[in-house]
Image (cartoon, rainbow, N blue to C red; front, side, top):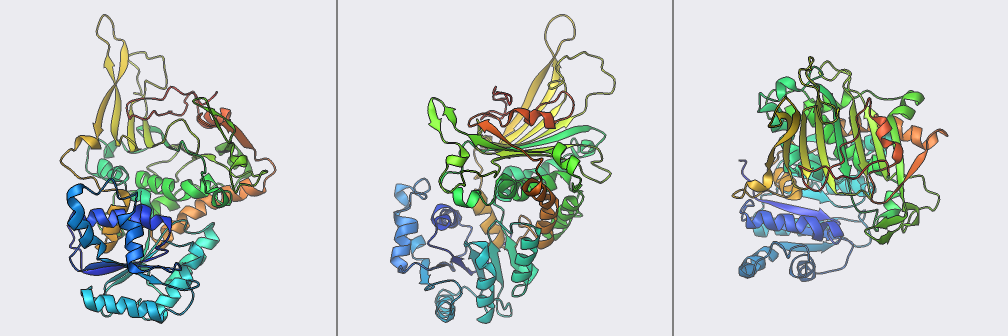
Length: 510
C-alpha cells in the first residue's frame, strides 16, 4: 500500500452541501481508520463569512451526515479531528485577490509541517475552475519545486465535447495534466473496480470475454427518485449528460478495454482511452433514430401516493423535452467486440434503485437439451454495482426427476459476506488515492474527450431533429412502453429487483 505523505487539503466551495455530506465524512473515516498522516489539515475556502469554529460546528459537531460514523466513545477522537479543520473567507467571489488565502495556506503549512504538499479540491461549478486555477498559479501554488500540488475537480466536466476541451485547456494552462484529477465517484465503488479483477485475474472469464462467446451486454442504472430540488440544473443537463456520458461510459470502458501491460495507472488509463475511442460513433440519422430512445416520467401514483411528473417539478420548463430516461444501443469497432450489441439505459423514477452489468453469453452451438424461454437459456454474469453489491452467475442444471428438463441456478457472491473487511465508500477511496498520488480511478483529459465525442452526435440529434420523440412513462415503471424494442430478437431488458438474485417482476410494458 502507498504511504500517505504529510499534506493539506484545501476545499473550494467548502460551505456547500458536498463538503458536509460527502467530503468531511470521508476524511473523518480515513482519519479514524488511520489512513492519514498525523501532519494533515483541511482548509475550507468559500464566500461564506464564517470562522474556524463555526465551520467545525457545521461540518462535524452538528452534522447529520457524520452521525452514523461517530460512536459514544469517539468524543476525544472527534475533538482531535475537528482541530485539523480550518476555514478561510474568500470574499465576494472566487476570482478576487488570493493574498490572504495564500498566506493562510503558508501559515498552516509551517505550523503543521504539511511539507508544501497540497490538494486543491474544486467543489464549485465548472465555470469557476479556470479562474481558481489561474489565481492559484499567480500565487505560485501550482509549483512543485518544494512539494507536490494536485487539483481535483468534480463533474460535470463539460456540457459537450467543445466545452470539455475548453475546460481541459483552461486547467492545463496552469497545471500539468499529471497534477489534474477529474473525479467520477462511480469509479470509487468497489464493484466497479472489481470489473478489472473479475476480468483479468480469472482465467474462467477472460478467454470468454469476446464476440465468440458473448451475445450482448446490458447495463442498467435506475433511480427511484425524481429530480428532487435539482430541476433547474437537470433541465439543462438530462439523463444522457448527467449519467451516461460520465458514470456509465466509465463502466463501458472497463468492460471493453484490452488487458493493460500492468496495473500502473497510466497503463490502465491508456487502455480505457482506446476502448472509448473504439465505440462506433453514430452520425446517420436513421441509426440514431433506431438505436436511441429518450423518455420523461409523467405524473402517476406510487404505492398509493401521488407523484409529480417531470414537467411539474420545481425549476423545470413546463414544455421541457429533457430526458429523464435514456437508452442507447451501440457497437464497438474492434476485433474483440465486433457485432456484439451493447445496451445501456439510465433513468429516474424507476421501480428500484439499482446499477448493474449483465453479460449475456451465447447458447451452445449444438442444443442437446431443449429450453423454451430464450431469456433463461443463456448463461448470464450479473455484476451488481449497487445496492446488494456482488456477482451472480446463472447457469443450467438438471431438474431432479425423469428426463432432462433444464432450469437456471444461481451461483453468487456478496461483498457483505466479507464481514472482516472494511469496504471504503466511494469518496473515501478516491480521496485516499489522490492523497497517495494514484490516478488509476481518475479520468484523463483524452478519456473525457473521447466519451464526449461519442455522446455529442446523440445529443445534437435529439436537440435538433424533428423526428425525435420524448416518450412518457409513468413514475414507478421501467420506462417507456417501447424501450424493449431497442433490443434485438426476442430479448428484453433484465428488470432487477433490490436484491441481486431477484428480477423485480415489474414489466417494461405497463
